[in-house]
Image (cartoon, rainbow, N blue to C red; front, side, top):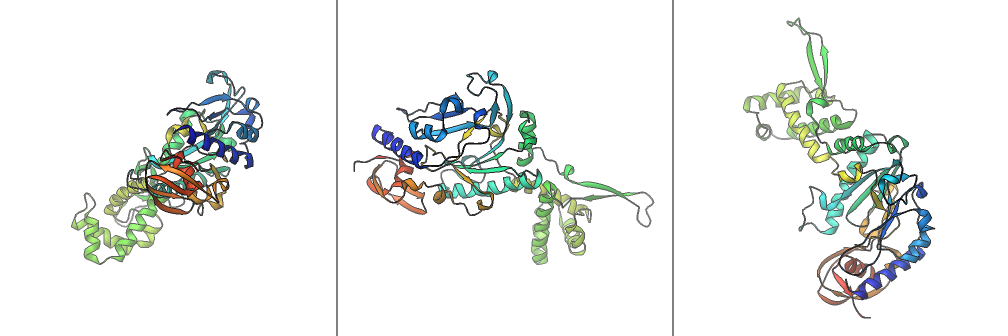
Length: 392
């Protein structure tokens, strides 16, 4: 980034901050603050170990310093400005989750466009919210678009703020499905023996009332519904694609599904041994498909610095946007996170990395060299290192 570009972006970030209304996080005076200024050269320098007392009013500080990136700590401390973590006096920490499109298994780097990556990240966010709200029962959630490649979720329930790293790692393992064994999901009930059998029997059930067992059961029933919609030959071929399922087991499993559908729907997977065997395979598929691939170090780190909602992301020029929970489905980061400050006029940029641009509701290809583009697109290109500021 050359001097002209850096000074242009710094100035326009300042214009944004002078107009923006930014709400600090709860207990802002107990948190560490950090920021990255617009420095010369290819690297970035983090200024951290600051308290709100050091910064003063957040909005005034941002308008004055015009930083490239702004952060606050998940942790709350006795002395947030102490230069050594051991001297800060840790009190508690928000439980923070980070979803980064670059790290999602479903994203194909080099093939998926920026917009496609963010769409896949939104899907992962919705799965994460399902875990947090339905499985854990959290209701104090703050959902944030990071301004870059993904989303953050802050949980500030008092019940979790005191958790140490190991306990936070258990939460990570649960939402990612790490170490989950099928047998742990199955409930075993001893029932009376049937006619001709004096000894009690065991009934194995996948509970349908929530958690990973309900997800595994849902995956099973999707498979059963698909099988029953096929003609018999196709269904048998599908069943025999499962390891250990030959023609005989496939026929038995299909008949069991037809004759015991209501029992299967209620969670009974003991209608035939082959059904139980298939259920185990499908449960592993459910984990692979429905886990939330969060960034573990962010959640387990009680001292993590996280982006300030309302600030600008210096790598995109997009706003770090807090999203109301009921607006998550409709949120479009490439439209809703474009600052109004950068709308309504065009600027000249010298494009060094031509190609697809997806921002502001537009999707277009920019050619190399000097181009006139909407300012939000120009800021996006310059912040991402794809253009320099041209002469007006």
